[in-house]
Length: 243
Image 1 (cartoon, rainbow, N blue to C red):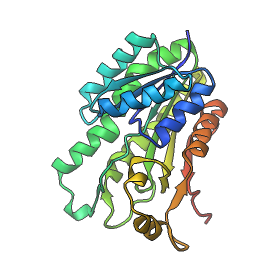
Image 2: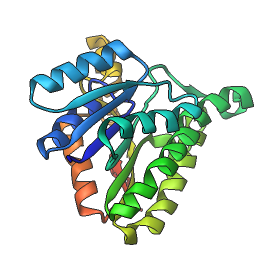
Image 3: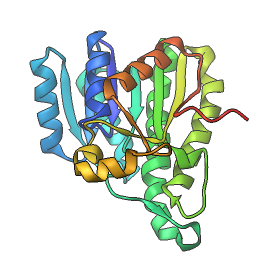
């Protein structure tokens, strides 16, 4: 039985690159996102490259769906060995903290905190029993570096970042890796990247303070290294400035 990577929030940038990187190592790939058509196209593209991939449409903004889709993946493959949770928002999700209300925050808490916690709860028993596994969450820079006027998703992502740091210390001795990748960057070929005009890209990436642009294949290699080395709980791009 092959090992299985489950990508929650699978998209055209990082998701596809992770599927190819782990697929090269013999992993089967479970693709999870809202759009069934997009997932089926991704699975077909990966299948044409010799990678076993199956789509599992699910709305991760409802935490009740998390355990359900985990069970669907287990029914298909029998196991989940590595989770990559990365449902980055397709729309601008920053609001000033003074304007943030509980109803708006609840949506992001569901998507960025409660759903990944539910997934971890569902997969960790199998991982610890086998003595191997990985649980990697992708978050944004405001989780680690809160700043005025760009709250919103940050509080929810800060919650899952806290959870993963705690989890790492609890499951490492059982052979399970837990880590978080904190990005202040734009991923090439992602939905957000592809939606931008050349002028928009030049505006947000230009100058000495412009946003970093990352090749998804290089980023996927980083995820593979984190999973196999198991020594670094958090990886940040760009690296924080030394003080």
